[in-house]
Image (cartoon, rainbow, N blue to C red; front, side, top):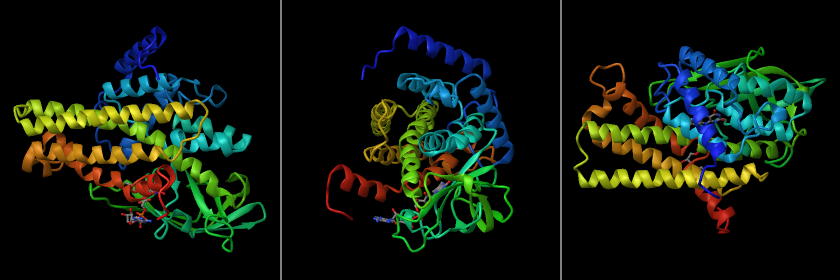
Amino acid sequence: MNFDFTDREEAFRKEVRAWLEANLPDDLRGRAFAASRADRDEVRRLRAWQKQMCEAGYVGLDWPKEFGGRGATIVEMVILYQEMARAESPQLVNRGGVSMLGPTLMKHGTATQQQRHLAKILTADELWCQGFSEPNAGSDLANLQTRAVREGDHFVVNGQKVWTSMAHVADWCFLLVRTDPNAAKHKGISFLLVEMKTPGITVRPLRQITGEAEFNEVFFDNVRVPSDNLVGKLNEGWSVAITTLAYERDLLTFIRHISLRNALHRLVRLVKKQEKFGDPILRQKIASLWIAEQALQLNGYRSLSKILRGGAPGPEGSTSKLFWSQVDQELAHVATEVIGPYSQIAGESSWAPDDGQWEFYELLARASGIRAGTSEILRNILAERVLGLPKD
Ligand SMILES: Cc1cc2nc3c(=O)[nH]c(=O)nc-3n(C[C@H](O)[C@H](O)[C@H](O)COP(=O)(O)OP(=O)(O)OC[C@H]3O[C@@H](n4cnc5c(N)ncnc54)[C@H](O)[C@@H]3O)c2cc1C
């Protein structure tokens, strides 16, 4: 790809930059680095911010126009993310909806489902959570046991999901259920859209190592879901889920790049503030993080180019997710070294550097090698499906 920006693209950059400068609320600036999605007030502010961005035409930029997007090019998307990083804007709060469910519905949803949900995903009027993982179905997702039984024009759902991010604030959930227990593991799974206020759903927050409860256990007890909310064909939900997961790895990794770049800039500022740039070992570490960040960006361009040219995300997208998680953790680790013992002080204390955001970041980074596919599983995918090595 050609990395030079055209006059039109530079004009777009100017437009986005000016808009972000004029509109990004002060209390959200700098939140891309270690933003919380656990706190209800924070989520409310982030929803309002996504809506404002949407009204200005900056959400779902790459979505086709008929679905409420701008049909933007890869380069325009890259420019938007770069400018969001530059302005230290938070990521979209409804990114699971925008980057995972939206593309899935465009590909597999009915016209009614598309009309019902896509616009509200963009405005964040409806927040979505992802109900895939279960106590015995994480890496081995196809082992999921939550049951849905057809009763007339409804499915009746019973079972449990776990690690469901934002379930405590979400309006809707895209849910994987087993609809044929006698079929082989990857068959007999269906993909449902479930409204979180449906009777029979109980959400229990789980406290994480960061101290926050951003994810939850979700229990389904005779939950009645209209059969019109089935996405794709009955018992063929696995192929729908594969679309969602591939977008999760590709697009979300690219978007997470915003917070990575932000953290890197902050790290450099921190090192300058602490006058530690004279340390040759630290300089090497920062240079290597900088190079890694650039490599990640170029790899992201490659995957996105393929998607936007009409291709589907492929197994090679696992490289970006795997590498991103390593860089993210290394960055947090270097920051901890720079700060020394103070890096352990949490945000409430006046002794915490950068309001405790580094402490939060270091703990949050533990999850980078787990969520959206663990590093071990990604290595298996790369070994088998990209390098053609024998099966696990
Ligand atoms: C912060 C966070 C947010 C999340 N949000 C959501 C969400 O919103 N919705 C949702 O559905 N899920 C969510 N998850 C769950 C996430 O997708 C799972 O944690 C992940 O898929 C791993 O599953 P598991 O935790 O059951 O671990 P397991 O699958 O039990 O794995 C345990 C360990 O064994 C290793 N392992 C397993 N199988 C193999 C193998 N074949 N070869 C080599 N090693 C193997 C794994 O790599 C891991 O180290 C979230 C997780 C985190 C950390």
